[in-house]
Length: 129
Image 1 (cartoon, rainbow, N blue to C red):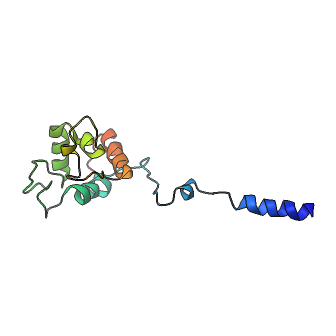
Image 2 (image 1 turned 120 degrees about the vertical axis):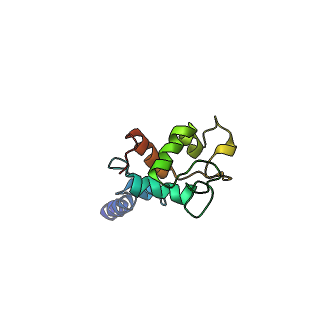
């Protein structure tokens, strides 16, 4: 009887083991910024999806209502250099007015992973890759 109880306990404990920490938080994606963070493959798609495109007037180089284009490398660099609050706007920093938080008119900021990618790209010298 002791043997059966021990075997049953072993099976129960084995069912509580996780091979991957991500299984503990389903729905979260791993965010790897240790490798190359590319402007064209990583940063530009974030900007186009969240901030504007050729077809809208929010942050496109042509017809931007804000004078801050975000749809090309040169316009992103220009915006970063001239705004002075680029990171603060996308991280919803409380030291700036919430009316400047991006995306505009949204309490939801871009994903933490996308913010980490932008930070990594900035910290690596804003390469045009």
